[in-house]
Amino acid sequence: MMREQIGGAIVLDKPLMKTSRAMCTMVRTRLVRGGAPRRIKVGHGGTLDPLATGVLVVLIGRATRLCEQVMGGTKEYLADIDLGRRSVTHDLEGEAVEVEGVRVPRVEEIREVLSGFVGDVLQRPPRHSAVKVDGRRSYALARAGEGEPLEARRVRIDAIDLVRYRFPVARVRIVCGKGVYVRSIARDLGEALGTGGMLLSLRRTRVGRFTIGQARRPTALAARLGQADLIPPGELGA
Image 1 (cartoon, rainbow, N blue to C red):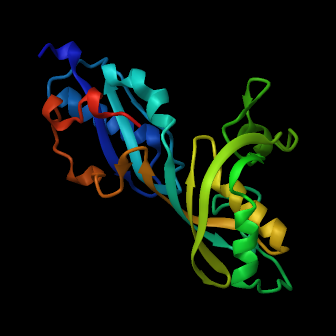
Image 2: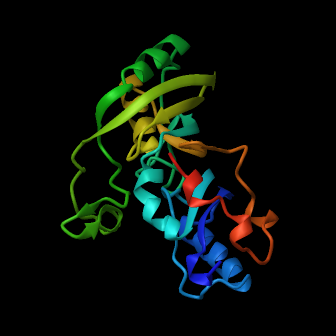
């Protein structure tokens, strides 16, 4: 096979505090060691924030053209939401502030609120997000004390299930389409309940047909990668 024809994907279990871009750089380095061209294209099928872990589909070479197809696949997440605290970023990136006098919500109340988030719904992205406003990232405006709350956007949420609850932490399983901000779900849940609402942890367990059981830890990858280590482009249907 010609070197420039290399292409496919690697499904990684992205570690905590690593960026999606850093994972792509790591894969490119190992491909080059294995003989791939230095300018080989490497991207991913849907970013994960540094504070999130789980399934990251890294696309290589000619498979990068399938980015939109992979990103359009259904996602699944496990999220721990703190109902006792809030932060400006709606996660642990911002300073967490205790909410005084919070009434402890019942399981039935939480489930009822979550059921209202299911369907084709309008969701307001966090101000500390990568959404562009007049050519600038919203998080940059927020950090500079500029900008306004972002307009709500239509997203698809297929299911939200309460997996475990012991106040103040509620663990939820989310099945959704692209563009959903789980931090916004945490914020909106807290607002609806009259409690705190911030994301403590987030783990993506599926992207399209790729599950966490198929994901490889970066530390387990060989120092040199080649075509034989990749999922072929024809098997990347979301």
